[in-house]
Image (cartoon, rainbow, N blue to C red; front, top):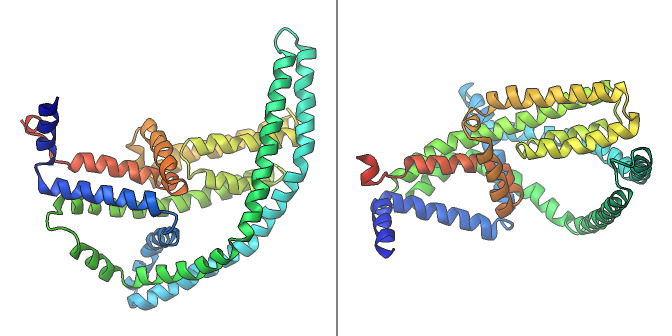
Length: 353
């Protein structure tokens, strides 16, 4: 057994470039896992820097210096975020409050409907099982409500942190955009000399991460706006709130779309019941989801299409479990990173033969 492990180690780690790549991966994963919460502003700034780098380059091609292009892009982005926050957040908040107020009525009507099923179809539905299921559901709802209230009170104490982040993150983004070459060159200088494989993987992943972040932002906007149009024209209640949820659900491939469909169905049934209006709304909503999965995603994420759905779902579960939101957000790039590392890793002698 020891000889087998020793032979495998010699075959896979005899190349010093492979050892460097392995150590860098272990170091990067460990930093994010153990102190990811402490460097959240830095991670947010990195994502925003990737997002804003492309328009910055376009301004530089028009003749602007890098520092002026950075100032203009950052000011435009901050202005857009402020306008979006002032215009969208109050509406979403208002609809969310109304939805919470309407939940007891929804739950009561749902209970009455489910309890009628055993009376109308006693051979199909068991009354005791339905009552037990309803009791369990009530306990979960009460627990969720308490968690939301606790989170609301806890968020009051995070106002200072939010204010600090609102200043710190733009500053980090500004210097990341302005001094991009200096920062990259400084990072390269501290890397070991045997870094050929690491640079190959980085070169491949750098462009993919930038494309992924830009593509994901575009997907959130397109899917959210298209869904809002569907809900608006079908006159569905809480249209803005549900559209925002559907838009952000694309952050979690496959799982997000399935999870966010539940509140859409619940609100639609509460408003219309099993009527043609509900059917039309669900058909239009299904068309948006189908176009997203079969047209928009292949266009925006050509590399992700090459990953098997099982690989993507496993990446969401694994990296989401390790790093929470950031693991879910970067699940596809991380899966692509694993694939790139396997492709770049030196083959054993027997495999090369």
